[in-house]
Image 1 (cartoon, rainbow, N blue to C red):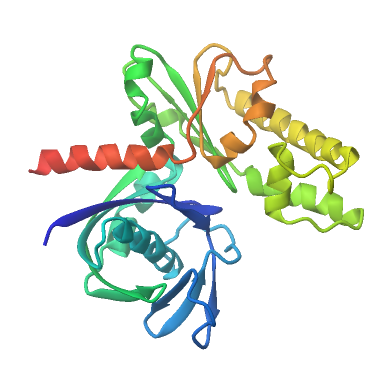
Image 2 (cartoon, rainbow, N blue to C red; image 1 turned 90 degrees about the vertical axis):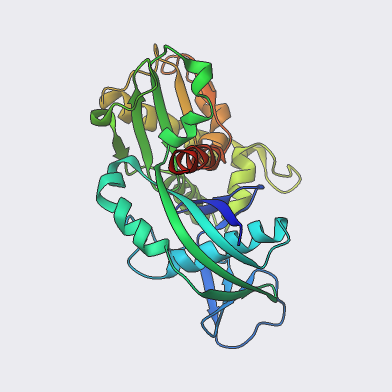
Length: 306
């Protein structure tokens, strides 16, 4: 059977894969078959509505089957693109830099499984995960831009749901291991802070609505200018505090080019770009940039094996 290569980014906020696949990192377990099959996974006799809710932050995602179950939706959607229901799969996944050495082998063992059968949206799939490549988040995203920054030292900032991961590279594109760090300060902290502020005013907004306001996409017929201003003030404060924390840790963001990675960076792009005193040259990478990097690195690894 031909081997299929699939890349998955297991964020604490969202799961992402190729072809624009993304969904919230959570699911609801149903005792009986749901009325609709939309987003419904059947695995080991149980029904899961994938993408409903969000789990608490997990640094080690191998402690239970949650993230394996979440991965099955991404696998099914990839296989659907290729019109496949049976496949031998090589999986590309990632880890934050600060957990890479500690958890790499655990992730390989966790995801490498055989004789997996499941249904997604009433389509039956049978797979073997024959190999797993584990890559470093953030640094992997840089791979797709490697040739654009030859002979240049880079600072990489991966703004995620619960953490902001940091690293630097040499002018030859090599990771400086001692530069790897993580700040427990991510987009979900900002969202929750805004939710709390609105709730005190008797307004209960969803996360999606808050993100639309941050991006300037919310309908002004329903969201007042005052509420827009409140959100923008919260976001500006968050960005200033984040950049201050990054600078305090010794990362140079005014001289070396900065690569902003992750969905959080895209969400706050407009606000970060306004902080010209803190940021010199910055490039904001696609929210799927880690996925692109995993895929490139995975293909390179396979060529070396062959």
